[in-house]
Structure formats: structure tokens, C-alpha cells
Length: 333
Image (cartoon, rainbow, N blue to C red; front, top):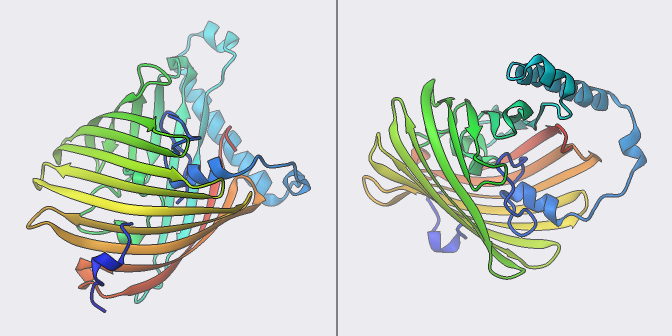
């Protein structure tokens, strides 16, 4: 099937936020945080008291990560500071395993991860970040939609992030990514609430990679809280790439429906394209995702039927379904 008329497709989700929190009540950093912000406070459940094998695994994994980062934090402390410090270094983040079969691609799998290491020895102004993808706006995009010839951002990265203050809107990074390139990056991020229901998140970035050279990004998200169970968010993003001297653009719309404390439905539609050789569409995506964490508050399951059209595949319609297991760890879970 050829690409459907774009006028019939709406311009048009979940990972722990590793950036400084702006105002997650009125404007979540991503749709996952939106799910959390819409949930009512959970009551205690006997299920969560069980010591099943996955509870033991999650605690052991968290403890081992914390032990490693405490050793790292200790490198920046004197002997006296190690003895009297009241705050310990810790790690937090998530790991996601996914199977994303679609037409002709039944073996597509994906592994996503994001780790943040907090280092109190550096006055909590410096974090160590490790991720499978530098683009935090695509944390819940299927692999087939990310692995296009236009996407050079789907690469593991490691970086040190510095913030002048813990609540600063500015942050700076130095690290390695994009096929072992060294890079430096500066970011500004802020949010504005126009009313108690309407708000906006905006950010801009400037970075330099050792081979890809200069790059820049600008993003704007408009969010409307319909009520406690429904939220609509429209995202817009532009990427400038110095190595190809063009712009990559993306527009998407998300509708979140929080069914109850442990179930949510996220509907998403997205269109992405380039400015060269002319302003044209490269891919269109639409999907509906069900997300559940009945077993534990740190363990999520997702099922997402989707439809994908790619220019590389002559915009032939590709139907698929993504099935994911996501584990959070750290002090927030």
C-alpha cells in the first residue's frame, strides 16, 4: 500500500527522566512520566511484600550497581570524607527488553537502557550517564523506526553531565558516542504553565562531535491536561546536522488515557522527514500502547500494535506489534 494521504493521519511512551525535574506535575519530560503524574497514589499491596525471584534479582541488581558507584564516588573523596559522609552515591535507571515483529521482520528485537550515576562527592553537580541512545525524545520508539539511514543517534553513549546548580535549566556534557566519537554538548531546558491545564516544554541544544562536527536541536512540546485520566501532548523537534548540512524534523501527537493506577493506554502518531534534497517525508508511524505494572511498581509490561511506512521500503504498509518488559531500579523505585 502506498503512503496514505498525510491529511488523514494525525501528526503524531515510558523511561525515567534523567534530566533535572522542571515541573513533572504540569509538564512531564516524557509520556512515561505523564503516566506516573496521572496515577493516584498507590496503596500498599501484599503482592509487593513477596520475595519472589524477580524481587531478589531487582534488589541484588540495585545493590551491585550502588556498590560499584560508591567505589567510583570514593575516588573523589579524602579518607575523612569517606568516614563522615552522610550521603551515598547511587545509580538509577531502567532496562527494557522488546520483541517487535512486523511484516517480513519477525525476529526484530531491541534492548534499551539508561543509567544515571549520582556522585555526592562532586556536590551532586556532576552525573555519569550511560545510555543506548543519545536521543531521549525517542525512548519508546520501535527499533525499525529508529534504524533508518537518517538516524545517526541510535548509538550507545557515555558522558559526564555538569549542572551549575541542581535545579539549573542549563547542563553541559562531555563524553563519547556515535561510533566512538568524542563530543561536547550544552543544553537549556525549561517549562511554562499557561493555565492549570495548558503548558509547554521547550529546549535547545548545541553540540560538537569529533567527526560529525557541529549539530544543534530545538524542541517544543505543548501539553493539555483534559482531566485526571486524559492528557494530550504535541511534540515538535528540529535537528541540524553539519556533516550533511540539512535538517531532520519530527512532529508527533500523543494521547494518554490512565485507566487506573496500574494500566494506561497511549495512542501515538508521528511523521518524520528531511529538508534535503527537498522537504519530504521519510517515515510515518501510528501505534496504540497498553502499559501495565500490576506485579510490581518497578516492573512494566507493554503491548503496542503499530503501523509503519518507510521511504526506504517505498512506503509499503508494515503491520507489527511490539511486546516489552521494562525494569526500573534505584532509589526512585
